[in-house]
Length: 78
Image (cartoon, one colour):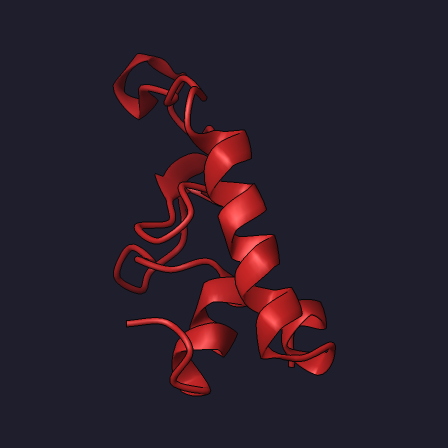
């Protein structure tokens, strides 16, 4: 499990709030302007954290970061 979920619900939700605030003004990377073979950048829909995957990644683009997936699996994130 992710670190925040091992510390309790209140701690996990506070960490999520802090990540949202930290990432709010962050400029998104435009993958179309990168060189071929560069890692692809995706953003978590819950907290806007950058998720970097190799261009050869075959699965569908991730919607949530690992921390938010853990929160959702516990029912703490809608």
